[in-house]
Length: 353
Ligand SMILES: Nc1nc2c(ncn2[C@@H]2O[C@H](COP(=O)(O)OP(=O)(O)OP(=O)(O)O)[C@@H](O)[C@H]2O)c(=O)[nH]1
Ligand SMILES: [Mg+2]
Image 1 (cartoon, helix red, strand yellow):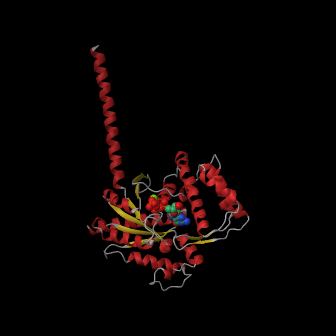
Image 2 (cartoon, rainbow, N blue to C red):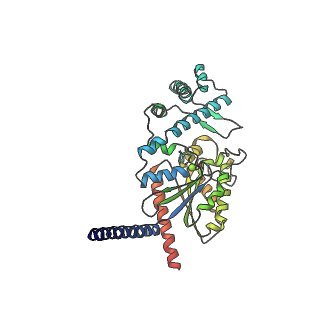
Image 3 (cartoon, rainbow, N blue to C red):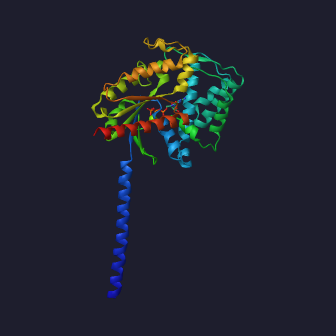
């Protein structure tokens, strides 16, 4: 019996030793991973594309979304679809454009599915008959867009309202989910494994302070196309102006004095479209712009210069990249350069010591 007890104790001792060395190895691994971590904070005004950039990076560097994650986006996709349709209908009301089929009106009060189908009829009728090329413009609202019939639009719509629909990565990138509070996403890829995605709404900003510690770079996202738009939460405030003030306050904040500032001048696709086709010229909103009306590059650089001028610290460069967050290549290229810029900054800091 004594022998048996001795054997058990020896066994336990052996097990504990194995466990302890495993813990030691794990701790070591974790510590060396922490050393390789660069924390990037994505900031920016509402709807500039912060979450889309984070999602895109997850798709590029972290094997995308699981089937379960994709399915979890389904309600948001349907919700976005309905919201967009409501906006179109409201715009039609403002402009007194009638429904092609009056019966479609009664669908609006039913639940989501009933609601969706008649509206699809409406869009289908309107689009297939090619009667809709309407410019929705209103003095009281900040929207102004042109609807063009497109078969891909209708194909997408049919795909999304099918009962067995599962969102694709591309759908997830286009869906708009209001970021609630602070989300810390863990990405296991080279150098960067944490991105902080913070909601852009004014009321959420005080929460940002809690995640500032150890941040090496701020990616500040600007929606280039927002120069003629106003805030949803306050229609008297120009979106680009709000964005400029926000960037300015971040630049002068003591917490960020040593932080690399990287501007993502985003939504270049929508900006190009607006500059080339809408007639809403940049000079009408920013008198400092002296370039030609259809010169997309000059207009983009003019807006970028306004942001660069916010930098109060001459020792800290402000980098910028032109991005289209829904385009993987655009984000991949920009992000690659960002990582390079951060590493170069780290090296310089080491050499200065
Ligand atoms: N066409 C186009 N759409 C974009 C681009 N970037 C973002 N979007 C869309 O713009 C909408 C808002 O993008 P989000 O990434 O949710 O914006 P956000 O900054 O996280 O917004 P908040 O969390 O509300 O502050 C989504 O529908 C995106 O698909 C872009 O470069 N081009
Ligand atoms: Mg967001």
